[in-house]
Amino acid sequence: MFRWIFRLLALLVILGMAGGGFLLWAKHKASAPGPALAATTVMIAHGDGSQAIAEQLTEAGLVDSPWLFLLNLKLAGHPSLKAGEYAFPAQVSLNTIFDMMHKGQVVVHKLTIAEGLTVNQILAEMRQTEGLTGRPMEIPEEGSLLPQTYFFSLGDSRDQIINRMTKAMNETLDELWPKRKPGLPFANKIEALILASVVERETGLAAERPHVAAVFLNRLRLHMRLQSDPTVIYVVSNGEGVLDHPLTRDDLATKSPYNTYASDGLPAGPICNPGRASLLAVLHPADSDDLYFVADGSGGHVFAKSLDEHNRNVARWRAMEKAKAAK
Image 1 (cartoon, rainbow, N blue to C red):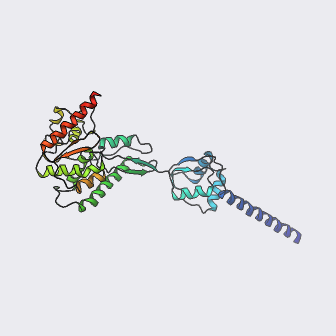
Image 2 (image 1 turned 120 degrees about the vertical axis):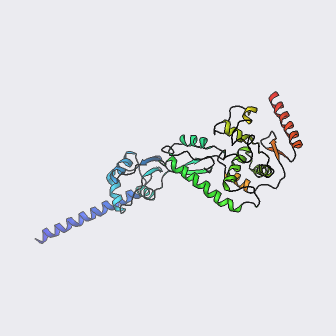
């Protein structure tokens, strides 16, 4: 009788030692390098349970078997695993997989919107951006989107990005408007936004923006028309912001509240989506009495206080353009 009990106890001890050894082996496997020979990206769908995840990671070559994944998931206390796109490194361990998925360390994509694009141009760029989903429910207003780099996860909607762009522009205006230079001829921050969009399209040189802004503000104070070519381009291009031909006399005479050759004051609304630097330029313009500027042939502009001086600058620019054409 005692011999039988002793054998039973011995068997239980052996089984316990074997079980303990098995668990130690499983824990060792969880921390050891995994079977993946190269970095591997997988997409875990919302609603996938641990069994489905285990099978997907096994098929991707990231873990040795579904049961080993599930066993170690249980030993780890069943941490919650978040859905999303994951880029797992080569030989990633089970523990690292659990950690990445529990923290939701998904792949981050980025969309960079350049300053000065129109809403139509931005929407076209977003349509071509892989990883975003859906169509915008509403077309945003011109000038309402702040150009900068936006980060997103696979499956985020285009409406989500548009909402973030709109929020960023509103927050930037709210931040900069109270700090503006005293005495500016703006009734509200929307007028500042409108002029910033004109400045954005007039020059690509950051150092020139406050000077260009000063010219337009001086003209507004003197009730002179702004006569900005980009406002005409916006009208003639139906909001695209680009033309396939130089501006003509007929273009400049186009009747529109956006055409600053045909209408007084600011255009009826923004002509593009300006960046933070252009907003700063119109709220903190340069100290200048200049009323005119024209291209200098090298990417910048030359400024003038009088019409006679401006006409000489224009003649010089036309001569340079004629010489270029002759070459």
